[in-house]
Length: 280
Image (tube, rainbow, N blue to C red; front, side, top):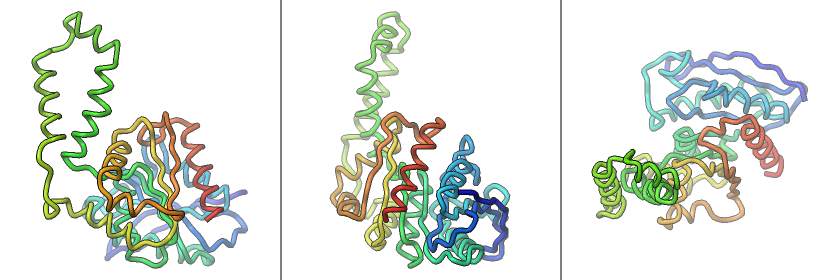
């Protein structure tokens, strides 16, 4: 299917935001896609990831808007973190529905902390019909340390290159021992109380519970952020309960890195998301 791309400018709390809309020719679908960029980065994404994604999805028949939230890229306003872009996401949805007359519902597509922002926002806007969450960001010191111990240090102990370097004197044994001990202490020391859990994680959970539409998880096999997300889901029933049931599906990309940097990984993501959207 052919599509056209055009730049659009829209308002968010008095600041001008810049986006690029990829719109299929002759389509009348009522579902569009808003890409929530993780970051901090602008609307093109690492290695033009979101350019490729929006074009591939538009070629499948879905209108797609990628945009710079306030303080990023070409948009006006003060810089802000993913925890504070609810107004920006709402303005982008308004811009998409205004620009594409048939669109009444949206799927939010987010990577890393963009996925986290999408989860936080989803329960606040009835127009959000679906969520596509790529390697969501749930970082805290304890889960980060557990992930490092299991997937980084464990991998080093099984690596022949590490042992050859150790025998040849290429490893500072004292420093490595201290670093490993600190990681184990962070991982398996006393956990934080419920009151100390970071606010953005609580908001993500609230959005997960409130949003009743379908959800698609995209998880990279070669990515500590994805592994940390799975670690949290496996350890905490509140997370696993929100990601169970027929409304939640998962696609694994066993060799992919955090941003799906290879062309075949990008193509597989776009194809998988398109098939899922068509089914749901």
